[in-house]
Amino acid sequence: MSDPKATDVVRLTGLTRSFEQGGVKIDVLRGVDLAIAPGEIVALLGPSGSGKSTMLQAVGLLEGGFGGKIEITGIDATQLDGDERTALRRTHLGFIYQFHHLLPDFTAQENVIIPQMVGGTSRADAEVRADELLGALGLGQRRTHRPSQLSGGEQQRVAVARALANRPQLVLADEPTGNLDEATSDKVLGEFLSLVRGQGSSALVATHNERLAARMDRIVRLHEGLLEEATPRPAA
Ligand SMILES: Nc1ncnc2c1ncn2[C@@H]1O[C@H](COP(=O)(O)OP(=O)(O)OP(=O)(O)O)[C@@H](O)[C@H]1O
Image (cartoon, rainbow, N blue to C red; front, side):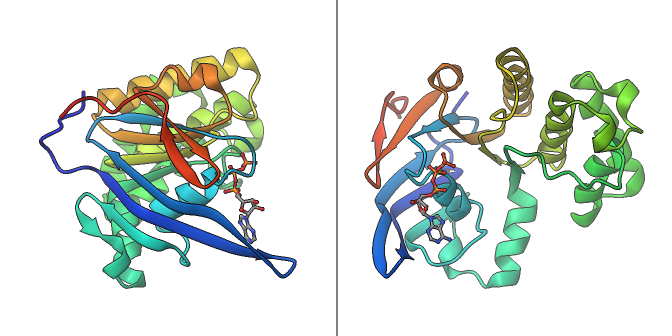
């Protein structure tokens, strides 16, 4: 549950982003404000091209070129240099994409171990954590398989385990089940939500899918470069 007294995990204030397309300037984000409390899972809805991925890139500290303020756990990311942003991303954020982006030459278990070791966890501890997550996702018997030996749903479960491995305060997910059939998508999303809730992380999940969005704590909607609240933020 969200704790309104704690520092927001994300606070965006007046976020803007424009792109040049064929000599024309397009204002994709025109002053987006958003706050996400600890433990809160927010669905980001909006039609194709509305700027959902662009917004996740801003919060993920993956790209420059944004105007406005981006605060992660109270830290103003716009004031950090590149190394500090990378450190903040590694310690506080987890990412899941529509297409899993797993390392093809490594096993499921190694895909979950590697980001932990990059973050300074010992191999032994990383292995325990990987097995715990893969087990919870029903992949205990598949730990030694490579991505190409797994189904689409299984690959996406490995991506979920990888994103949660470092117990990030915030998980950013861009159409996390967008390439799966409806039944698998429902199952994988349910497993993802229960793991995120279980460890008390927050999440911002971009999706086109209203039915999946309805399973999250709050819905916000991008419309013409601004964010509309489809369900109100819980009272502070
Ligand atoms: N690097 C870029 N250069 C130029 N235009 C860009 C760039 N990145 C995004 N855009 C434009 O910004 C707009 C928003 O794109 P974005 O990918 O954020 O939308 P989206 O809501 O995530 O769409 P989808 O649901 O299709 O993934 C689009 O018009 C896109 O063409």
